[in-house]
Image: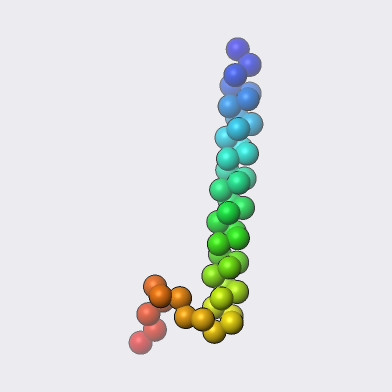
Amino acid sequence: MRASGDHLLYMLAGIGTTSFILGVMILSIFALDQLGIKIEYRDED
C-alpha cells in the first residue's frame, strides 16, 4: 500500500496552497491598510 505516501504528498501540497493563499490575503489587507483604505472590521474609537 503506497497510498499513504501519496496522501501525505497531497496533504502537504494542500497545506502549502492554503498557507500561500492566506499569505496573499494578509499581504493584500496590509497593503490596502498602508494605502489608507480602512478595513471594515477594524473599529478604532
